[in-house]
Amino acid sequence: MSSEPSPGELTTVFAHLHGMLLSEHDATAAVGQLAGVAHQMIPTAAGAGVSLLGADGTRVSTASTDAAVEAADDLQYELGMGPCLSAWATGQAQRIDDTTTDPRWVGWVAAAAEAGIRSVLSVPLIRRGHALGALKVYARSPAAFGEPEERLLGLLADAAATLLGAAQPAEAPVRLSAALKAALASRETVGLATGVLMARNHLDPGTARSVLLEEARAQNRGVAEVAAEVLEAEQARGHDGRR
Image (tube, rainbow, N blue to C red; front, side, top):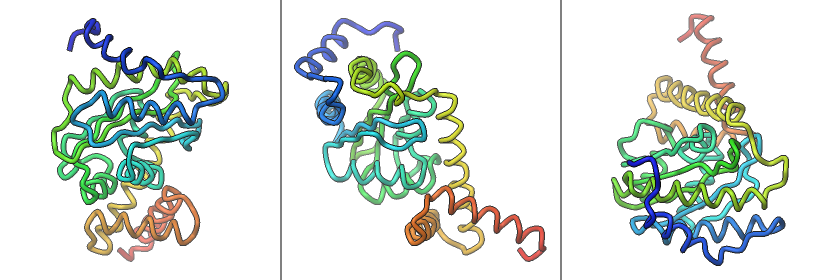
């Protein structure tokens, strides 16, 4: 890809943003409009979503174009992992060509595939070096998004982040380094715990993930917290020689 956006790309972005009126008190309406704009801009997308995130990774404001996108996003925050969180944490676009074969975010990709989502493209919303959240599109066919779609969605995210920055409270933007550390720690914990349950109980990835989710819901606790206890218990088993 070239380093500078073409006039045609910029025209497309600003044409879609035209009439998108954002105010300091209207972040919720803004993300709803932005999700619709992203869906319209990427013809191969079956749906789109936007999340504005706080410093601890919790959602400040969200919007999606359909129930499937909303459910897929909800699961990312339950598990503490997924392309949207990684885009926000790293400041880099995350693309999944096929959820049935992608090795990242074990558990989330399996659930997404089961729901009929095969391709994902998520880009960060960054303003002045701070991550505000992420913008993403989903498709029901594999390899639905390539470099042209990634570039166009990135341009939209850059323009939208400037507007959304005015709609965010001053304390909302987060430093990428802190976000990265928290998101990757949670992701690694859940992933390792899923692997432990798979090996210990001869489970497939989806079933192991479901066990973690059900336990977290039953205890009304975060999935990462329950996953940490699974790892601690496994470590204790190893010390006792009872594996």
